Length: 316
Image (cartoon, rainbow, N blue to C red; front, side, top):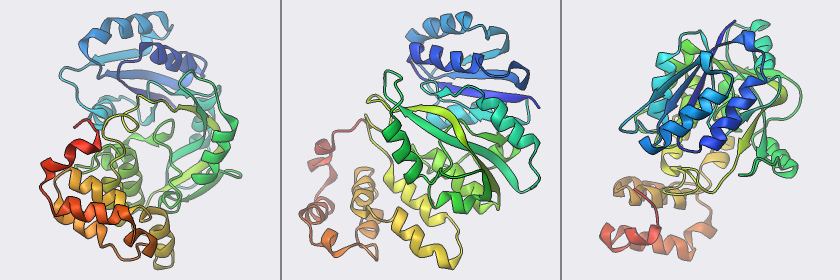
């Protein structure tokens, strides 16, 4: 098996160097190519190219800068379309692979006995901006995202109910990724959109039960700085997720608990009718309906957008 490792990059040359260093520690015979889509401003290109030259992996790397910027998920789609091999592993330029991760995922794939399984993933260690792993946050992340216990294969819709499939560092069949990667209303939650479409396509995924990657949490990320998580897009995708009737209540508890945030996100983007629909969503707790925040959102929806948009403090 040969794997195409795809790295969507944006600025942060020092962290790209760390990501490549983590790849250099993997079983080289499994890596067919490393495709880097550099979405950085031109001022970063020379530094990123210098990092590539010093990585020891230059002969495997296909470096593709883009101007103008493609954007986060269009950049990933471009890389997947360019990949030469039948299995993909996406690694964000600020994250890292754990030692032996590629072999672990490749072995799970090679030994797979269920044709329905199209994706293989493990746990993530949570690290701070300096690259220091936080065991407490890592354990809490595993608990919240249902990445616990021994290896297991399940329908992707089951993994979706705990949002278990990570945003990167999973192994996936190229054909499945190309089929389900693109969603025109995904916003900045395209990884969730991919999981939902994969689930609705009837696919299964296998959890390998071991740590695969180190995921960096930092203040400058797209979803922490700027516009924040597109909660309204995540809500739409959760509505599209098809689960058996007996699991609908679990889906509602997991994904429809912050409808006031969803309403504000719709209002921010000028989708007033969708904002009203979110605000009047059945099942909203009465504490939310009788809160000052609920009243403030109603006031927002009854006044012109330009009167309050400045208060949300986000970059468009």
